[in-house]
Amino acid sequence: MRTFRKRAPRALALTGAVTAAALLLAACGNDDPMKGMDHGGSPASSSAAPSSSSSASAGDFNDADVMFAQMMIPHHQQALEMAKLADGRAEDADIKRIVAAVEKAQDPEIQKMKTWLKGWGKPESAGMDHGMTGMMSERDMKDLAAAKGKDFDRKFAELMIAHHKGAVEMARQEQKNGGNAEAKALAGEVVRAQEAEIAELGKILDRL
Image (cartoon, rainbow, N blue to C red; front, side, top):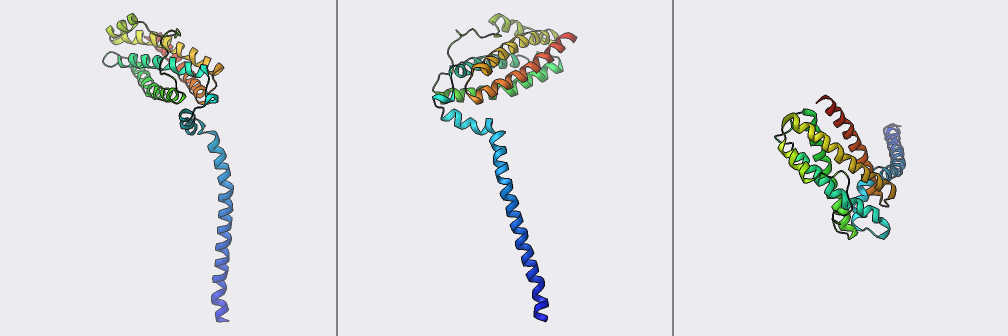
Protein backbone atom coordinates (compact mmCIF):
# COMPACT_ATOMS: atom_id res chain seq x y z
CA MET A 1 0.00 0.00 0.00
CA ARG A 2 2.85 2.35 0.86
CA THR A 3 4.39 1.71 -2.52
CA PHE A 4 1.08 2.44 -4.26
CA ARG A 5 0.52 5.61 -2.27
CA LYS A 6 3.97 6.93 -3.04
CA ARG A 7 3.93 6.13 -6.73
CA ALA A 8 0.35 7.06 -7.56
CA PRO A 9 0.88 10.84 -7.26
CA ARG A 10 4.08 10.57 -9.29
CA ALA A 11 2.27 8.64 -11.97
CA LEU A 12 -0.55 11.16 -12.01
CA ALA A 13 1.93 14.04 -12.13
CA LEU A 14 3.81 12.41 -15.00
CA THR A 15 0.58 11.79 -16.87
CA GLY A 16 -0.46 15.41 -16.31
CA ALA A 17 2.90 16.70 -17.51
CA VAL A 18 2.74 14.57 -20.65
CA THR A 19 -0.79 15.76 -21.35
CA ALA A 20 0.20 19.40 -20.78
CA ALA A 21 3.21 19.00 -23.05
CA ALA A 22 1.05 17.45 -25.75
CA LEU A 23 -1.44 20.30 -25.51
CA LEU A 24 1.39 22.84 -25.67
CA LEU A 25 2.88 21.22 -28.75
CA ALA A 26 -0.53 21.11 -30.37
CA ALA A 27 -1.05 24.79 -29.58
CA CYS A 28 2.35 25.67 -31.01
CA GLY A 29 1.59 23.62 -34.07
CA ASN A 30 -1.61 25.59 -34.56
CA ASP A 31 0.15 28.93 -34.02
CA ASP A 32 3.00 28.36 -36.44
CA PRO A 33 0.89 28.18 -39.63
CA MET A 34 -0.95 31.35 -38.62
CA LYS A 35 2.31 33.11 -37.93
CA GLY A 36 3.57 32.02 -41.29
CA MET A 37 0.44 33.42 -42.91
CA ASP A 38 0.89 36.72 -41.11
CA HIS A 39 4.51 36.92 -42.19
CA GLY A 40 3.47 36.33 -45.73
CA GLY A 41 1.32 39.45 -45.58
CA SER A 42 2.86 42.27 -43.59
CA PRO A 43 6.62 41.87 -44.17
CA ALA A 44 6.15 41.40 -47.88
CA SER A 45 7.69 44.80 -48.51
CA SER A 46 10.70 44.19 -46.27
CA SER A 47 11.31 40.49 -46.81
CA ALA A 48 10.59 40.66 -50.52
CA ALA A 49 12.95 43.60 -50.95
CA PRO A 50 16.21 41.62 -51.15
CA SER A 51 14.81 38.91 -53.40
CA SER A 52 13.03 41.28 -55.79
CA SER A 53 15.99 43.64 -56.05
CA SER A 54 18.83 41.11 -56.14
CA SER A 55 17.26 38.49 -58.39
CA ALA A 56 15.06 40.73 -60.48
CA SER A 57 13.98 38.85 -63.57
CA ALA A 58 12.15 40.27 -66.55
CA GLY A 59 8.82 39.62 -64.85
CA ASP A 60 9.77 41.53 -61.69
CA PHE A 61 9.63 45.01 -63.20
CA ASN A 62 8.64 46.98 -66.26
CA ASP A 63 9.67 50.22 -67.94
CA ALA A 64 7.39 52.26 -65.68
CA ASP A 65 9.18 50.91 -62.59
CA VAL A 66 12.57 51.79 -64.05
CA MET A 67 11.47 55.30 -64.99
CA PHE A 68 9.91 55.84 -61.56
CA ALA A 69 13.18 55.00 -59.79
CA GLN A 70 15.38 56.92 -62.23
CA MET A 71 13.21 60.03 -61.90
CA MET A 72 12.48 59.85 -58.19
CA ILE A 73 16.14 59.53 -57.17
CA PRO A 74 17.19 63.01 -58.41
CA HIS A 75 13.82 64.40 -57.30
CA HIS A 76 14.44 63.17 -53.75
CA GLN A 77 18.04 64.37 -53.91
CA GLN A 78 16.89 67.91 -54.65
CA ALA A 79 14.42 67.76 -51.75
CA LEU A 80 17.36 66.85 -49.50
CA GLU A 81 19.35 69.80 -50.87
CA MET A 82 16.43 72.09 -50.03
CA ALA A 83 16.20 70.59 -46.55
CA LYS A 84 19.91 71.17 -45.91
CA LEU A 85 19.47 74.87 -46.66
CA ALA A 86 17.15 75.12 -43.65
CA ASP A 87 20.10 74.75 -41.30
CA GLY A 88 20.80 78.24 -39.92
CA ARG A 89 18.08 79.80 -42.10
CA ALA A 90 14.73 78.35 -41.01
CA GLU A 91 12.95 80.00 -38.08
CA ASP A 92 9.55 78.31 -37.84
CA ALA A 93 9.42 75.19 -35.63
CA ASP A 94 6.96 73.41 -37.93
CA ILE A 95 9.16 74.07 -40.97
CA LYS A 96 12.10 72.58 -39.07
CA ARG A 97 10.00 69.53 -38.21
CA ILE A 98 9.05 68.97 -41.86
CA VAL A 99 12.69 69.40 -42.86
CA ALA A 100 13.62 66.63 -40.42
CA ALA A 101 10.85 64.39 -41.79
CA VAL A 102 12.04 64.91 -45.37
CA GLU A 103 15.61 64.00 -44.43
CA LYS A 104 14.52 60.93 -42.46
CA ALA A 105 12.29 59.53 -45.20
CA GLN A 106 13.90 60.40 -48.49
CA ASP A 107 17.53 59.36 -48.08
CA PRO A 108 16.61 55.71 -47.28
CA GLU A 109 14.20 55.74 -50.23
CA ILE A 110 16.99 56.90 -52.53
CA GLN A 111 19.20 54.03 -51.38
CA LYS A 112 16.35 51.55 -51.88
CA MET A 113 15.69 52.72 -55.45
CA LYS A 114 19.40 52.59 -56.30
CA THR A 115 19.41 48.97 -55.11
CA TRP A 116 16.45 48.16 -57.34
CA LEU A 117 18.08 49.66 -60.42
CA LYS A 118 21.31 47.81 -59.75
CA GLY A 119 19.40 44.53 -59.40
CA TRP A 120 17.48 45.26 -62.59
CA GLY A 121 20.69 46.01 -64.48
CA LYS A 122 19.59 49.57 -65.22
CA PRO A 123 21.52 52.86 -64.82
CA GLU A 124 20.67 55.10 -61.89
CA SER A 125 19.95 58.00 -64.18
CA ALA A 126 18.41 58.28 -67.61
CA GLY A 127 19.13 62.01 -67.85
CA MET A 128 16.73 64.85 -67.32
CA ASP A 129 14.91 64.43 -70.62
CA HIS A 130 11.82 62.93 -68.97
CA GLY A 131 10.65 66.38 -67.86
CA MET A 132 10.24 65.79 -64.14
CA THR A 133 7.56 67.95 -62.56
CA GLY A 134 8.18 69.95 -59.42
CA MET A 135 11.93 70.31 -59.84
CA MET A 136 13.39 73.63 -58.75
CA SER A 137 15.45 75.77 -61.10
CA GLU A 138 18.92 77.06 -60.21
CA ARG A 139 17.34 80.44 -59.62
CA ASP A 140 14.85 78.95 -57.18
CA MET A 141 17.63 77.27 -55.22
CA LYS A 142 19.75 80.44 -55.12
CA ASP A 143 16.80 82.50 -53.92
CA LEU A 144 16.08 79.97 -51.20
CA ALA A 145 19.73 79.93 -50.10
CA ALA A 146 19.72 83.74 -49.89
CA ALA A 147 16.67 83.88 -47.63
CA LYS A 148 16.58 83.76 -43.83
CA GLY A 149 14.03 83.64 -41.04
CA LYS A 150 10.38 83.98 -42.02
CA ASP A 151 11.35 84.83 -45.58
CA PHE A 152 13.12 81.47 -45.83
CA ASP A 153 10.19 79.69 -44.17
CA ARG A 154 7.73 81.11 -46.71
CA LYS A 155 9.93 80.36 -49.71
CA PHE A 156 10.69 76.87 -48.45
CA ALA A 157 7.01 76.09 -47.93
CA GLU A 158 6.03 77.40 -51.37
CA LEU A 159 8.82 75.54 -53.17
CA MET A 160 8.40 72.30 -51.24
CA ILE A 161 4.66 72.25 -51.95
CA ALA A 162 5.41 72.45 -55.68
CA HIS A 163 8.20 69.89 -55.31
CA HIS A 164 5.99 67.45 -53.41
CA LYS A 165 3.18 67.81 -55.93
CA GLY A 166 5.61 66.73 -58.64
CA ALA A 167 6.64 63.68 -56.61
CA VAL A 168 3.01 62.75 -55.97
CA GLU A 169 2.25 62.98 -59.68
CA MET A 170 5.13 60.64 -60.55
CA ALA A 171 4.17 58.25 -57.75
CA ARG A 172 0.57 58.05 -58.99
CA GLN A 173 1.85 57.16 -62.44
CA GLU A 174 3.88 54.34 -60.88
CA GLN A 175 0.83 53.10 -58.99
CA LYS A 176 -1.10 53.06 -62.25
CA ASN A 177 1.50 51.68 -64.65
CA GLY A 178 4.18 49.95 -62.58
CA GLY A 179 4.63 46.19 -62.41
CA ASN A 180 6.95 45.76 -59.42
CA ALA A 181 5.05 45.30 -56.16
CA GLU A 182 7.74 46.89 -54.00
CA ALA A 183 8.08 49.92 -56.26
CA LYS A 184 4.32 50.41 -56.26
CA ALA A 185 4.27 50.14 -52.47
CA LEU A 186 6.92 52.85 -52.21
CA ALA A 187 4.91 55.01 -54.61
CA GLY A 188 1.93 54.63 -52.31
CA GLU A 189 4.01 55.75 -49.34
CA VAL A 190 5.25 58.78 -51.28
CA VAL A 191 1.67 59.76 -52.06
CA ARG A 192 0.54 59.30 -48.45
CA ALA A 193 3.45 61.12 -46.79
CA GLN A 194 3.89 63.97 -49.22
CA GLU A 195 0.20 64.79 -49.59
CA ALA A 196 0.09 65.10 -45.79
CA GLU A 197 3.10 67.41 -45.85
CA ILE A 198 1.56 69.49 -48.65
CA ALA A 199 -1.51 70.07 -46.48
CA GLU A 200 0.66 70.93 -43.48
CA LEU A 201 2.86 73.33 -45.45
CA GLY A 202 -0.29 75.05 -46.74
CA LYS A 203 -1.42 75.67 -43.17
CA ILE A 204 2.01 77.04 -42.27
CA LEU A 205 1.87 79.47 -45.20
CA ASP A 206 -1.55 80.68 -44.06
CA ARG A 207 -0.16 81.83 -40.72
CA LEU A 208 3.26 83.13 -41.84
